[in-house]
Image (tube, rainbow, N blue to C red):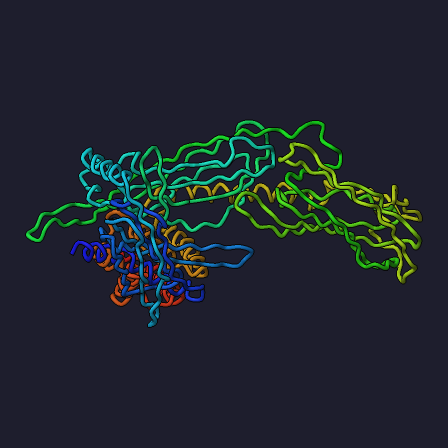
Length: 613
């Protein structure tokens, strides 16, 4: 009964979320896998988590494990993530069924296949084995567990220690910012990982203030937060989720600090009830505010003096060059290309200076970077194209040069020689470009010839246009004064001002609702539409939003002079938006029709003139 009660409670919380996820991830790859320790100690508890990705499952069946006793489960948790890269979106979801067992004897535990129904088909995990070792370690661990329970300590894998009567402290749940290195050079990558440590199940996690990374360029590493790992900190075990992981490239030397973040967290505790059937646990949520630590990194400046050919590359790179086409002709476009490959700050490498012969019409370089994060740095290829057009036939030469980068591994500058290239240009058809002529021209020719200049005296006082310069400003000033007096009288009437601006404010909010509609964000669309309707009625009827209700809206609209049919349309629209806001996946309304209805209702109400009292 305890397990069924827990599943029903958690199921109501996640059912609406899962329904929205299914349509998004239907085309993603579906998998059903298991996460479990390969070795445990006899007498200890251990977790086995079955993970269903990119699908909605039902009728989950956990395997029996001979030689182990089931303590708790299955506990269902769901997660969802989406990314937007280069104009393309991708999404994924997962359902995790967590079981807690206790190893009762040493030897090998044969864990059979778990099963779950997905879309009318049954998926199963692969069987595996867990090695159980015995000895004094088992007894010592059991004694430590019992001692901790006697002292009132909380264990992540034992809900009997997670009583709702206990206060949740900073030792039970916290967020930690971890840096992969204490010191790096400028432009050298350092990995920043933000982790959540908790002894309680987390039902909701909302960042209210993200850590700031002043002085760094950031490359985020895609992650899917999930409480599927266990770590030991100061002798205590925690469930761990990686909230964020990114590569940081420092842009200046000195001590740089990543500030702390603030988070709103809901954790699950359990109220215990004694019945004739035994002790039952009822899950309850507790809201907390959690603040992470700060983290600092010492940034070392790049050694001086810097070579002239150094353009900011930090890492380990190779360079090659290309010339296309092989056969050059005058007035025909060609391209000289640098191809830089390697690991480091490749996205931020500046284009090397290219010394082309002056007989070439050279254009600005174009860069294209294809890079990906490797977990500790960024690896890829930067292609830098230098377009040019030969203006004269003959043999020319691009002089030899070098590409220099700073290698943090050796803490030295390293240079790669780039051989010169001979350019043989044949005669082609065409004429020198204007771009080339202007670039190579110091002073343009002065215009010559008869400019036909004449001097004609005129007296402006005798012209009627002269007096218009005085009359028109005077008339404009008079009109401005009258308009200003009218505005001051209107602003003194607060009720009139609220009524006049009601439609304008509502239309502005409806524009925001249209943006949510175009993005397919149902929740945001209905929330913004509902807000615009309540705000419009508050301003139109001169009633504070806090005092508005559907009953007094009907009464005030009737007193205002609104017909019964329009009053009914207004209430139906409010009901429709409220229902869709709190259950968007159950709403079968078309957002476009709801938006049109809201705009029509507001326009209709705006055209009604207040009935004289």
